[in-house]
Length: 138
Image 1 (cartoon, one colour):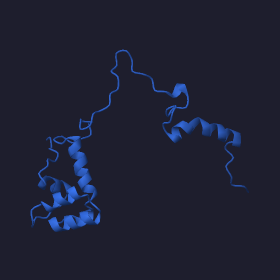
Image 2: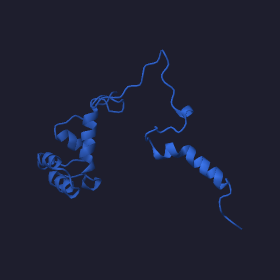
Image 3: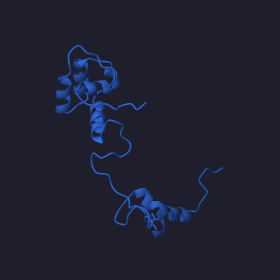
Image 4: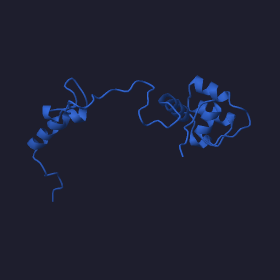
């Protein structure tokens, strides 16, 4: 008993492959749409045109009380401090950041943390560095 795929013939497989090649390969010179009928329709007469968001502007996903730049910088800090370092004090966080090849500006910021304080989360570290965390709206 053969277990090969018999859903399509090789000719149909080739045709189907070429139909989705633009979607699979991504945008190129002709865009990501293979056929004209797959192009998105433009906005209607009474509809606003889509706009791009400028750097640092709210994209709707940032928490209340923080800008997108703040969110991205806190995330950048968190990339160089692993969960195994938390809870931890200043020396633990600095050592962990160095192990993870953190940039000099992050190491320098962590070295400015007060000695003897244990931090449970990245948000606590972020706040101790003088930055704002999100505010809760209740």
